[in-house]
Image 1 (cartoon, rainbow, N blue to C red):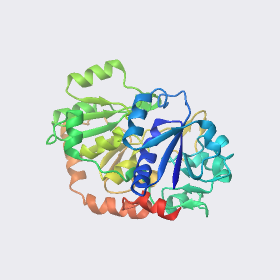
Image 2 (image 1 turned 90 degrees about the vertical axis):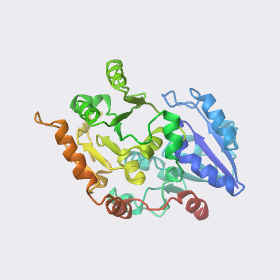
Image 3 (image 1 turned 45 degrees about the vertical axis):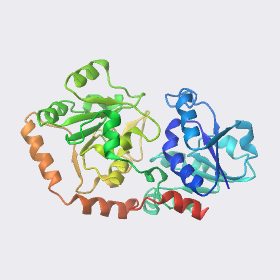
Image 4 (image 1 turned 135 degrees about the vertical axis):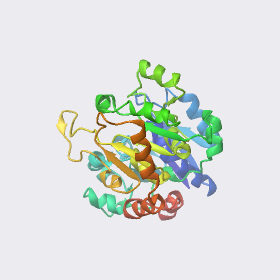
Length: 338
């Protein structure tokens, strides 16, 4: 069995890697067909890390011209490389959805692939995208074993210290984010971990201020993915309407969410102001717009105490049953089905 993967962005490794590992266990041969993206996550910018990954996971690298003749199974992410992939007449073509990008891109690749790996039937129904081509077998990136002790050692974190992970807002929304809440967490003895992206970086001034107080700032590493590793060691998340909510649910980390995402983006009103909005409607999440002038460290203490007093286990379980999956066998299910 040949498993072939079109790779234009390193961020896709978190979805591909678990499938490759399941394939290795079955004696399959995996091959990457790599092209540049010109973005911060371009495989050619991170060539050494990609070479290390390929060596560790027995992945070959083929010429992009060879993708037209590869056989058995050909994977991509959303519409990435679809103009090339659709010309292959020998392999079964499967597109993996990436967070909620499918809302806009589904129509661009639907006619050119054999199957589309969707998060769940209920999510497909919510967006009006249920179709016989869809596969509902789970999300591959959650087929990963993470060790809290090893992660703390890797990032030089104290395992016994309370940690809150801040998912850094887009630069566009930063002016609406109540950044002073970081000081409140520090006053309560929490270690603040900030997860940012290269395209929405933390300013040098903020970075200096955060690190002087003993907090940590992280950017993307590809596999295991930084967000998932940090979630594994965090007690709480502060989010701003991002699709990281999906990862919070699957890793079962409660969150405080600041609803600051605008309805008009890229010059037009978006049909879904907050994608995955349905995942925020559970007891594991405190939804806020902002903090008023009377907010204080003592109020934050009461807020977090209320959150942790809830039946979080039942809340996460119900959310997974409603919208996602409670299992971690997506790759096994995927390869069994195809």
